[in-house]
Image (cartoon, rainbow, N blue to C red):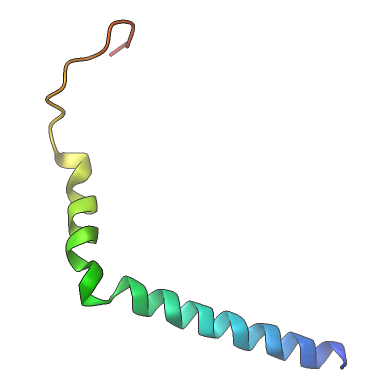
Amino acid sequence: MDSGTVSGIVTAIFVVVFIGIVWWAYSKGNKQRFEDAGKLPFEDDDTPAQQGDKQ
């Protein structure tokens, strides 16, 4: 096998992995989890600060 063949195989593997990640990210099963994670920065932290924590 020459370097061109190896390069083609590696590229094909990365394309398949990329498509898998995109499919996983946009699947309906993950929608609620991602929306909840996206709202985390906007939620208030109701727990009091620990002693020694600086604000």
